[in-house]
Structures are given as C-alpha cells and as structure tokens.
Image (tube, rainbow, N blue to C red; front, side, top):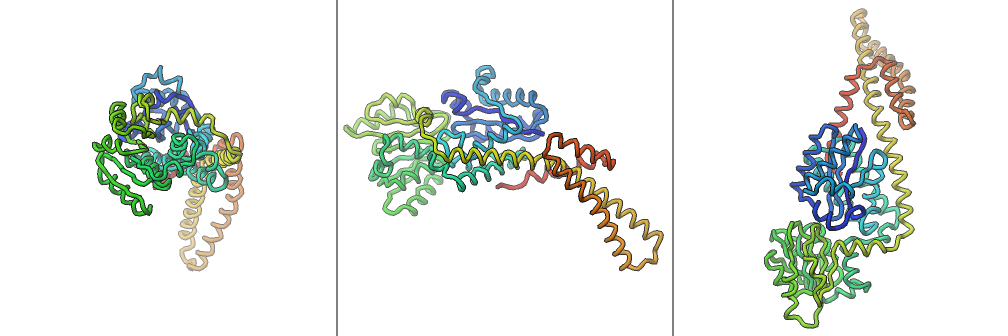
Length: 448
C-alpha cells in the first residue's frame, strides 16, 4: 500500500474556487466514507481547512486511485470534474509523505510557519479515527506529521518566518503599524466562537482592545469564550451576544473579525453600510477569515471601511519575506521523509519475521511435546533446562537472518528479501497476512 494525496489549496486554486469546495464536518464524513468504499482505497482521511481540501488515501493502484479520489472530490463539492481538474494536485508515495510533512511544518501555509495547521491535522486525524477510516498507514503518517511539525517549531525559528493568519490579517489592517498600538483602546467584535474566532479574540485581547464582543449562534460557546477571556485579561470588558445582534454591535465596533462555518453571508454590504451611517469620521476595520466568505466582497468599495479577506491575505503573503529558518525546516522534512520511508519498509518485513518466529516457537513446542511422550519420567528441572536450551538455539539461528532482512528492507528491492524468507522457510502466506491484518487493526488506535 502507498499513500496518495489528491487535493487543491491556495497555491493551486483561486479563492473563488476554494469557496465552492468548502465542506462542513458532516460533508467531510460522507466524503471519507465514500472514499473508503471505493475499490482501490484501503484507508482514507481528509484535511479540510479554510485554504485547502486534501483527500489522503492508502491505495494499491495509483491511476485507479487518482481517478476515484478526483471524481469523489468533484461529486461531494459540487464542482464539475472538468472544471475542478486543472486546480488539483497529486502526490504519491514519498512525495505524498513529503507534502504532508511540509504542510505540518507550515511550509505550505498561506502564511509560512503558522502553527494552526497542526491543530487542523490533529482534527483531521481525529475524524478519520472516529470513522475508523485510518488504519496503520494513515495513522502513522498523520501522527508523524504532527511530530515533525512540532520538531520544526521547537528546533528552528520558523515561527519568525510567518505568523498566524489572524496576526497577519490584523497586521494588514493596521497598515504595517504595531498591532497592539493600533488596537489599544478600541472596541472589537468577533463573529463566531470556533478555533479561528477564538484565536482572533485572544489576539485582540492581548493587543489591548478596551471592549470585546463575541457573537455566535450558540450562546453557550460564546459565553464560555467570553468568560475565559475576561478571566485571563485584566481590565478587558467582554460580552457574549447572539448572532442576531451582530449587525447592531457592528455600529459600535472599531474592529470586526468574522470566521464562522456559515454557507451564506454573515455581513452584507448593506449591513456594513448601515453601521457606518451614524459614525462620521470613524473607520471600521473588517477582517474576514472564513471560507466560504462571511463578509460581502462589495464591502471593499465602501468608504470608511478597511477590509481584508482571505483573497487579500493570499496576495499579500506572496510578497512576505522568507526567513533562513525555512531552509532548516526543509532539511528536517527531507530527513524525516527518508526515515519514515525506511520505517515503513521495515514494517512491511515485520509480519514475515513474526510469522517465522511463531512457526519456530510452534516447532519447539511440538518437539518438546514429542520428547515428553518419549521420556515421561524426565524430571521437571531437566525438562525446563532442555526447553530453554532448544529455544536459545532457535533464537540464535534466527537472529542474524531476521535482523539482516529488516536492514535490507530499506534498500532497493527490499521486499524481495521478505519473499525469499517466506520461500526458504516455507511460511504459510495466510499466517503472514494474519499478522498484517492484526497490525492494521491495532493502527487504528487513539489520538496523538
């Protein structure tokens, strides 16, 4: 089995296309389930963020896998396959692993080095585990991507190469000024209470806004976020309001950040225009981090509004300076891809080695039973010593070939050595397959 990735992101598709392929959690689960039902697919997982949708699968057949995953993405997003295909990229085997690790390190993010992607990868793995669609291969891939991402952030200064999308967006609104100096004393409205909205609210609180309003469809979530921020930020006034009150709160706000899972507009141009009517001379700064967009793009044309959305951030980030640490992270990714490949190849040998040792143990057991039948008067101490001696002999005879075959697994044609081992010892192929199935089912274990 090899890893296959078919997807699109801000690097391959315009925002207008990314908006159309956005999937809520239920739609993601349905896509994963349908992918798992496809003939070439053994495992499936989906990484869906505001600027990427990538379907990961463990497959035996490359071309059949690409065709199946591409068709499923088109069907579930509602974008025709002919229209979608030019924006899709495909990664296979080591290139797929390299892509996953690069994504985990933030190298493929809109803002290079941002760390939010690690939480999104963890969520994607959690959904796949919940659906029992991730076996050993994808569990190991996603968990290793999390480890590689954490290593990149701890061993390098990749964080200096870029910030979170929230911070980057606020910097764009502040026109290059220091965000705390720009935001201090202002009133801010955050629409939504999910992970991105929570990050935006916390960032604004740290920046020194005087008042913060959280608007959300679920009031309990809005209140929990508001209470948490009020408890952790001295002197900050925080209120939670229902989503229906958002446009009214907009009239009092200096900064508005929106990131919900809504499929339609949350703030229309008319609503923003009304909010500006009774505030002559004041400017409203609006940041839309949702995909699909929460705020009408026509807001760009309103006087008195500074507006930044995902599309604007994509254009601005293209000119962002790259830090030298990015090269260090690329080196980490390359080394980790090699190590992951070698570990996977060695893992493919393991079922054969386990089957060989199991057969050897069965032979020892059978011979000792035969000895007990021929020498029934043998005392327990002597019988135990003979058993231990036979086992040591078998272990010593098997040690060199089993260790060596694992070493050779990472070399070109490594799988041939496992095949040779099976033939030389006349191992039952079903016994080897049974070990593989047991390993795969164990690989569906818990979260990172």
